Length: 128
Length: 128
DNA sequence: TGCCAAAGTTACGTAAAAGTCAATTTTCGG
DNA sequence: CCGAAAATTGACTTTTACGTAACTTTGGCA
Image 1: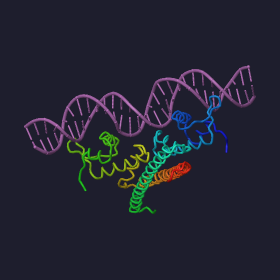
Image 2: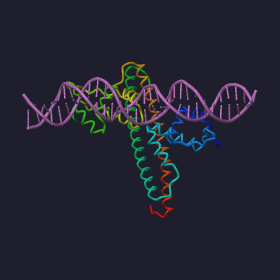
Image 3: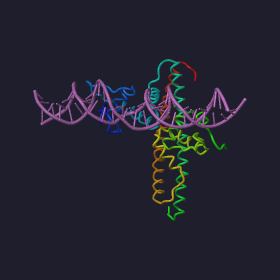
Image 4: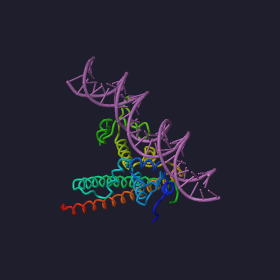
């Protein structure tokens, strides 16, 4: 595994702009190290970008993604904080399960629609 | 099943504002009938709202949701159009499957994080 | 050491999806 | 029939998530 990636390497890999990566840094989602002013992205930063984009595909806002990636971090040493994180994790999991139900329902309705189309095609004498 | 719902009934049921419903109408997602100027929402409109909100939870834009709900409509009579709709349905289904994979991965990482927290709690002598 | 492509900063612009506010209308129960 | 509650329209504002200049800095190498 490589030690560092440049900003343009990541933009090409993930199909996003440098502006986007800098924006995520401003928002505190990633913290690449610097050599002078130039950002150097470590594998951990790259993985974070993956997680961020996954969150985006699921419709989470930047603020929500920030919350989520904070859950991925090393657990703190204080009992109260640990319990709070566990609660937040369960919340997010429930939200994700809701999204999963939404997906199943949407796919089911799309399946029904497609069947309707296929039947209609059959009526018109088109072989499937 | 009721014949009509008022706009505020739907805002209460779904936890959205009247502005939002009117916005969806402006965007061509719903077309409630009118008695005078007042909107009357039929069960079909109400169901559309459900589908719209489902799409929102999954991170689809209004434009994408418009595309999706058009797929739910009665199939047209022309072969070319039918085939095109079937293609679009398959595209959306693939997108949804990707989202589902994203969800599974996110849940898996949350599970791992939670375990880390639980272990940490155990180290601190907290009984689970 | 001189150059240029890549990286950086700063600041303003914008599209989407509503929120908010104001000014009318409409409806409807008593 | 009347007045409060509900609904409508229209305009303006806000927030999010970047896009787009415009200009400067930097680092690698011929």
